[in-house]
Length: 112
Length: 113
Image (cartoon, rainbow over all chains, first blue to last red; front, side, top):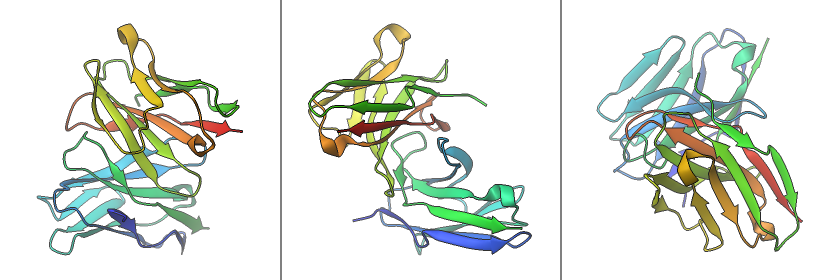
């Protein structure tokens, strides 16, 4: 049973479009939701994170929308660039810094 | 930014042999983690470690696995003996404390043959 699920394994958008990556979770105890970006051959790097007390977190071109009632969240990447092409992991934990439960990842391709 | 270094990047080992994966965490970090990722699957938590002790481990952390960080040196994951199903990429991570960002290394690809 997957506790954190990412609905798409892959997503392709054109440069300049907004990429939307979706994630859902099952455990109501989760209260911290980081998104990690991973390039081939690299480890995951924290991109942006949100706590369950908030419904939106914005950092530059990246925004998380969070719906606690529906237990889902999405990462929006505005004005997508080819350099954003990577695998994005949604993760969750019951406490920031505690063990992270990862989704399966979404491979984003941004076409010029 | 802060770097977590993992040595080696690749390791091929015969089934039944012992292997030690080494991790050099961010210098002032206190919490250490190992995650396992089988090709094409999601990353899964193995264990976390603080103040010289295992704090929590998952079902994937079999009896053949052990971790230690002797005297502030490398944080290591030892598998003895290895099995074919241990083939995966193992990611080390560290954080300064609870509630702080977790930094990941580039991973060690372990192939058990």
